[in-house]
Image 1 (cartoon, helix red, strand yellow):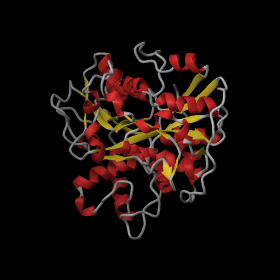
Image 2 (image 1 turned 30 degrees about the vertical axis):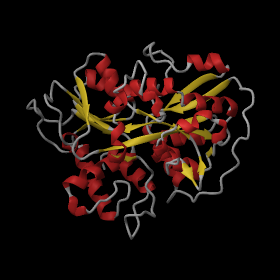
Image 3 (image 1 turned 180 degrees about the horizontal axis):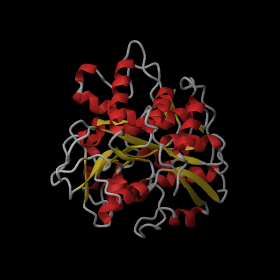
Image 4 (image 1 turned 90 degrees about the vertical axis):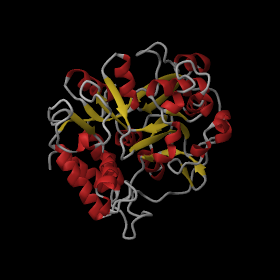
Length: 390
């Protein structure tokens, strides 16, 4: 489950983007009908998104699909959206479970193709808030099937924090934690340029005079303030994480006690009886709404369509939500799923949709800044510099 190296992935994406995301072209024609399966489907996915019971036998939504369709599922995990973009541009994959900070880049780059929703019988079961979401719908064409969504959380050690931390300041600013020890070397940050938005979100509360209205739409001064916060954070960070399993080990064996994280890591550590909990602090949180997207040159399009339909089944959606700590795209999964339970969707944040700042790719032309915004290619190069201590 190892992902691309940070420098390889991010520099590849920087080269792809150039100074800005390219304009959207007219959509190619989607598939008209589904034929016989090709015997395989290859998916680029976030860790924990495609499970066949190898980690926990109770969580398996691959084996039955393979038996029913004859399509063998292979998975390449990626720890950041930039890795997903780089992998999809390399080619050879059928599908990707892309977040909003990758999906529009893939569409603009013609790396993915529009889908024919008529070939996906369960499309009508998709949450209406997601059906035409702007991160996968362009000029009326749908470029994917909504999968799951949720928020990035503050994961923390309950041995150190007897009560939940109320602010992200425990990972952004040098301080002593409730156990009386400094946070230096015991906190982590996400290894991806999109994390600049987390810094901007923090500043929306703590430096309102900056006037930040959207953490993905920053003018030069707002962007500079976010970078300054991240450079200061660099002095206390133990590791910039992008591998979920390495972060799990860091909380278990390396003395890390607080970090941005995904509910997936929280659930794994809790299942191991570790003293771990998570919260969304007072500043709010960034988040992800993920879409299963079809490569423009998918080698196994028929099996890919079969998987997209399977991905919306209430059983898979509920099991995945229970496993990852996410919210299903098919809300039928919220009732009657043994693993998720009837309160699982509420616990995982079903009512928080309008409070989450979902990942999306920053572009130069934006709505909240009259003079334009700092585009993503700058986020990439500047975050590399921060990671390198510059």
